[in-house]
Length: 142
Image (cartoon, rainbow, N blue to C red):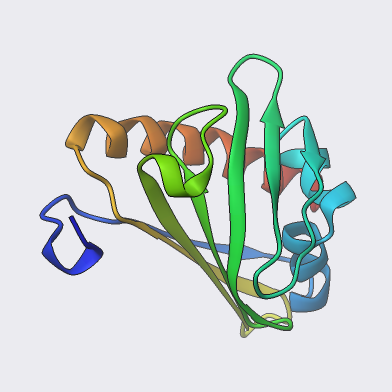
């Protein structure tokens, strides 16, 4: 099932941070910084178009990730596996797009769009996950 024919709604989140777009960009793309707020660790991931690796959570497992778009300080897109220990080609994936823009107050407006869910249950799991993880990002950028 392709994204275009998928009837399950995407996840849409918009947040404002006091941090500059450059600072938020680093938190999203530098593997060491990403591991400070999102997974517990990042394995072999190069933040560049086509870069692949794994995001690792101690309680959830390793999830394959591949960078699909990389527009410095403005937009990144990655595809990641829905199932632990599963290469991207061997199971369901979703597409996560992050867009950054300067806010009127000098900080950053961050837009998150995740699509490609095959079920409302899978979407619901990630809605809850993003609530937690974006809270972690908020704390990290303070």
